[in-house]
Image 1 (tube, one colour):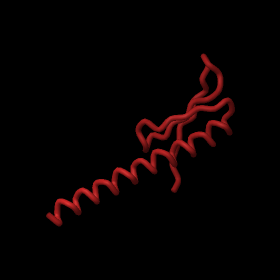
Image 2 (cartoon, one colour):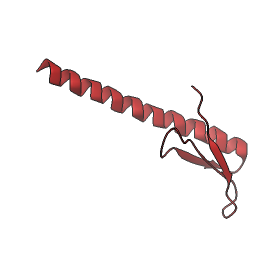
Image 3 (cartoon, helix red, strand yellow):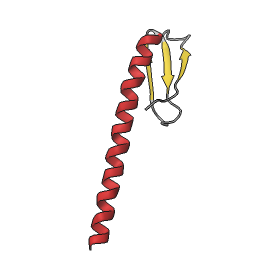
Image 4 (cartoon, rainbow, N blue to C red):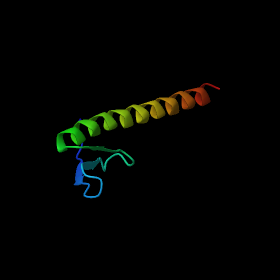
Length: 68
């Protein structure tokens, strides 16, 4: 999967802030552009794992409701 990310230079603290608009709350940072991009990849994977867990939990809850 490919996600667009936004990289902004952090003039106050130096380094770079990066976010993934498709995943609200998915942000990271790095001292260099390369580090920020590597870090956002990890953040995206974490966000996707949580989304998948929540989706599976919803399916399990619905299955229980239907079975009762």
